[in-house]
Length: 370
Ligand code: SF4
Ligand code: SF4
Image 1 (cartoon, rainbow, N blue to C red):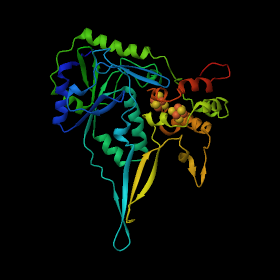
Image 2 (cartoon, rainbow, N blue to C red; image 1 turned 120 degrees about the vertical axis):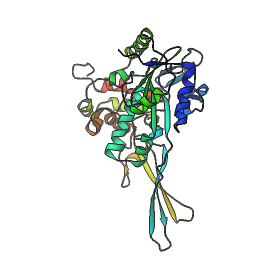
Image 3 (spheres, rainbow, N blue to C red; image 1 turned 135 degrees about the vertical axis):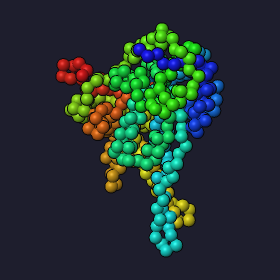
Image 4 (cartoon, helix red, strand yellow; image 1 turned 90 degrees about the horizontal axis):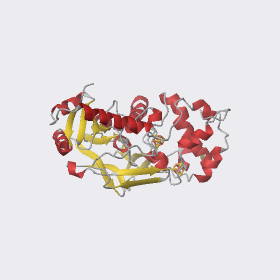
């Protein structure tokens, strides 16, 4: 086995400097309002240090000072999604001309390059799903430019949350592809593997030391244990037929008695791509800006067509979310729409857990979960 080069923790600043020299705005994990979020970092000292976390249904708490590491947490409420699919943005604007005609202008797409440090395997898998939607299906220019502008430094996950189930979806916790650099964290530093040609170029400029084989073996074993420690799971098979055979299951009504239709689950989900579009006229009435913003299958407007809201009841909305995510997503994109990050479980205010709902709804005639 080839042992990757080793970057001592005090040299992390060298990595940031190389990225900044190449014109990247650097983004990494920082603590904001009690949560780990991606935010701008100008110096390695600004990266969060020493945090672990507890996540359970409807519960997320950071704990400071319990480790010397910088990436000993699984994930926060954000994924990469806001960096490629903006929560709100302009798509185009139309201006009235002196002769009364309209001139249309597409929104600018000259985004700055962004380097993200601390990306997780589940979020890379989610990014691949978003690429299928925004690039392969829609050819979305905003998404395309932002995706091309990203340099991704992934960190293999060693501290899964109680809510994680990426091992059962096949999306983590080990990073294997679709990033530029992949790091294994140890107490003193990082093993650095180059994944893309851009990552190889950057790695050549880093002050890497010779990696210790035994230490690397331990680092890999930590990631394997992180997968084995996950307590939640979803069935590995395509659940489309099982779910569509259960559209009248009484559980939909039961879950709707708890569900608030708040849409938190869809906002934190790294794969959800639903959005609404609005035209905003200028005060003088001579210009209209066309905007797109994140929407949710839990919002009343999401199923409003020709004066009718098709999914009036929460029961219908929850069923839409689960049957699309784990069922009809297979028809659209060849796999499920869930990468097992567990965010929808932690950030649901009433702790609804799709792994539990699937276990109940997709139980076969013998009574065993499929
Ligand atoms: S459905 Fe839940 S666990 Fe799956 S990717 Fe979305 S937020 Fe993560
Ligand atoms: S499942 Fe939870 S997060 Fe999602 S809409 Fe219902 S209450 Fe909100």
